[in-house]
Image (cartoon, rainbow, N blue to C red; front, side, top):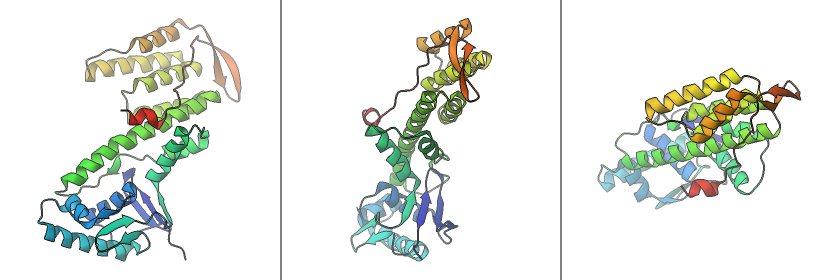
Length: 281
C-alpha cells in the first residue's frame, strides 16, 4: 500500500499517514526538523541543521543529537520522505505527500501567472490557514529556528490575506455579496486593522441591504484605530461611510437575483494581488 504523508503546518501541527495520526513523534525538535525540511524544500548540510536546532551546544554534541532525531523520523515516517547522505539531509519532494503550505503557494502562483482561480479553489485554499504557522510548537534553545518561524508566520499570513482579497473579488464578480462578506470577515479576523478589508465589509453590508450594520462596522473600526494606534481612518474610508449614510441607489443582492436597493455606493473590489507586490515589500 502506498504511504501518503500529510503535513499541515498552518496552525498546530497535524501529521498523518494515510489519514491516520503518526504516533511516536512527540519530540518538538523532530517535528521542527521535519517541518523545516518540508516547507523549505532544499537540501541542507548536517552542520547547518545541527546549528539550527542546537546552536548552544558544541558541534559534536549537536551533530549527535541530529543523528538521533533523523533515526526517530525514519522510525516514524519511514525512509521514503527523506533524502539522507553522510553530509546532507532533504525532504523528498518526489514522494507521495500533501503539504498545506505547498497548496497555498500553488494558488498564489496561479494568481501571479494571471490565472483566475474560481471561488471554490480560493475558499479551499483560504481555510487551510487554521492559525499561525507552527502554532503551539515550542522548541527550546533554538533561536535560529525561532527566527525562521517568525519570518514564515508573517509571510504565510500575508499570502493568506492575498487569497482572501482574491476570494472577495471573485464573490463580487458574481454579485454574491454574502459570500464576499463572509470572506471579508474571515480576513478581518486575521488582521482587524486591514483598512481595505474594512471598507470592503462596509460596502458589502450596504449592498446586502444593511446600511446600519455598515455604519456600525465603520464606527467600531474607527474606535479601534484610535484606541490601538492613535490615528483616524483614511479619507477614503470616511468618504465611503458618508456615501452609505446618504443612501442613494445601488445594485444589491437578494436570493438568486440582483435587485435594486437604496444606497448609492460604487463598489471597489480588491484588486487581484500578485506576488510581485508582496516581494517588493
